Image (cartoon, rainbow over all chains, first blue to last red; front, side, top):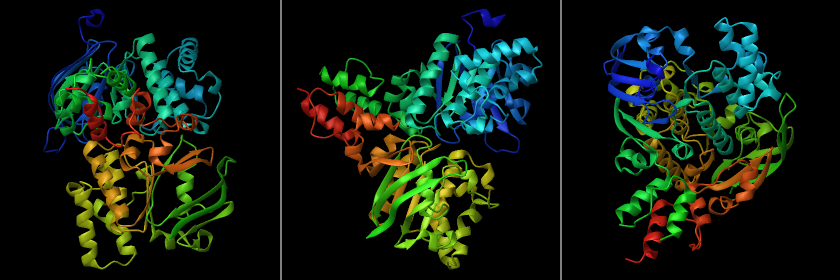
Length: 285
Length: 272
C-alpha cells in the first residue's frame, strides 16, 4: 500500500495536461504537484486559469465524465484516478460546491447526510453510526429532523460537509466555500476546516478569492496561470512575491503592506499572517 | 435631492419571517452606499424594495419622489438597475450579446447607440470573446459581470450591485472599484451590498449595518468600520487596515485608507 508510506504524497499530479473536447487551448498544461496527507492547500489564480479543471481532475470528473485529450496522470492515495471508478473515488475525495443548495435536496438533514452512504449500499447500523458521528462532528445534531431548506446558509454548508464527512474521505475539495457567507459565518467555516484538519487529519484543497480568510490556516498556496502551475509556496512567501498580483491574486492588505515595507528597507521580524501580527511587528520597530 | 426614501418600512415574507422591521432611510441622488450584515439580515429585501419587486407591508418607499406602489416594476426598471446576487436568476437570453442588448431594445434605444453601448460593455467587463456564446457556458464570475454589463449598458439613474465581487479575481475587482468611483463622480446613486469588507473599504461608501431587518448603524465607512462591538453583533468583520490601526500602540489620527498611507506612516516613524 503506497498510501501507508508517509513519504508518499496523498495526491500526486504527474505531468498532467488536459484539453476539453473541441477546445483549441489546453486547459491544463504539464502540471506537477504533490500534496501530502494533512496539508491545507489553497489553489488560486484568475478566472479561467485552470483551477476548476484541476479540481475536476483530482476528483475524477475528468476524465470519467468530461471527454477530451488527457496526458500524464494523477495518483490519489495510491490509486490512479483515470483507472479508478467514480464510486471508489467518491469515498476518497469529497467535494463541497460553492452553493450548498446544489448539493442538499432531501427532506431532512439526517437523510441528506446519509445520502452518499445510501448510494454505497452500506449496512443500516453502520450507516446510522457514521451519520451520527458526522452530525456530531459538525455540531448539527439539533438540526437532524429539520428540513434543509429552512436552514441558514452557514447551516446548509455544515449539512453538506457532514454528508461528505460521513463518507470518511481523506481529501476534501472546497470550491469558493465562503463566497456566499457573511464574514463571521465565513470565519466560522474556516475554523471548522482547521479543526477537521487537526483532529481528523483531513487534507484540504481550497479554491478561494478572499485569501485573507485562509492565510492563517493554509500550509501552502499554489498559483495557476494559463493552465500552468506558476507559484507554489508558503502563504507568506507567495503573497509577498510581487509577481502574485500579476497572476490575478487579490493580495490581502497585510501582505501588500509587508512587501512594500520590505522594499523600503524596513526590517520586520517575520512575515505577518494576520493584521494583529502586522501591528505587533510595527509596534516593535 | 433625495432619490430614495424609506419611511417606517416593514416587510414580512410569506413564511412569516420578518425581513424588514421599521426601516427609515433617505439616500441622496449622488450618494454611494454600502450595505453590510449577516446572511438573512434583510439586505437583499431592502434593495428589492427599491425597484418595486417587493412592496412594503407597512410604511412606504419613494423612488425619485414616486411611491413604488403607484408604478409598475417595468416603469421603475428604466431608472433602477439591479445586478442580483445570483446571476442564474437573471440571465435568460441565448447569447451574451442579446443579454446585454435586451433591455436597450426594450427601452427603445437607437440601433447605433445600442451597438456603441454593447461594444463598451463587452470590452469593459472582459466579455468580448463570449459575444456570441450562450451565457450558460460562462463561469460564475463571468455571469456576474454579464449581469452588471447588461445593467450599466442602459445607464440607469440608480445602480444596485448585490455581492459584485463574488468570483472576481484581483484585476476584475480593481475594475469594479474604478467603475464604481466613475459612476459615483458622474452623479449616479449607487448601492453596493457586500460581505467583502476589504472591497468596501477601498470604495469608502456611506455604510448601513443591518441586523434582523433593522438598520443598526448608518454613517461614513471610516467611522462605522471602527465600531468593533456593533460590527461583531452584526457578524461583520473589520477590514485589515482597521484592525492594524486598532492594535497599534502609537496611532495616527484616523485609520489608513489604503496600503500606501500605512506604508508612509510606518516609514516616516522608522529612524534610518
